[in-house]
Length: 119
Image 1 (tube, helix red, strand yellow):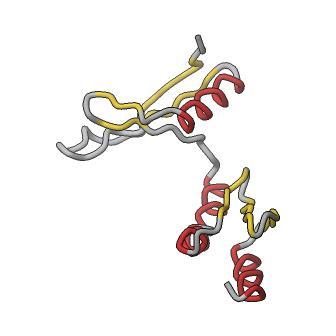
Image 2: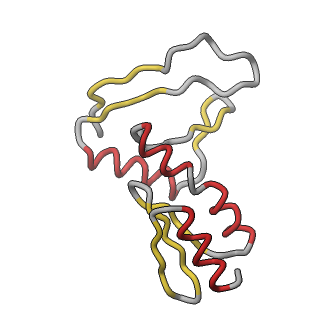
């Protein structure tokens, strides 16, 4: 069993019917508990509560969120070409192409790499 150090909802009114519930932030006492919860949430089928799917995400700083968000269009482009990728912490894109891993820290680097390969 894991221990929650503190938990609170994001400020805001009660959501309208049909809208997702408010976000809940939890700080767990042990980081290995957080890692286990996030890993199980990825591996297991979706969890539902009262007909709403529950999603689990790590809470990143605003700066890290912006860096990760900068890869959104690149990830869509890679997915459309069936190229495997993953976004690693804090904001490093790993692209697997022809059995080789390539790492990028800026979206422009990925675009230049794709251009060189004619992808």
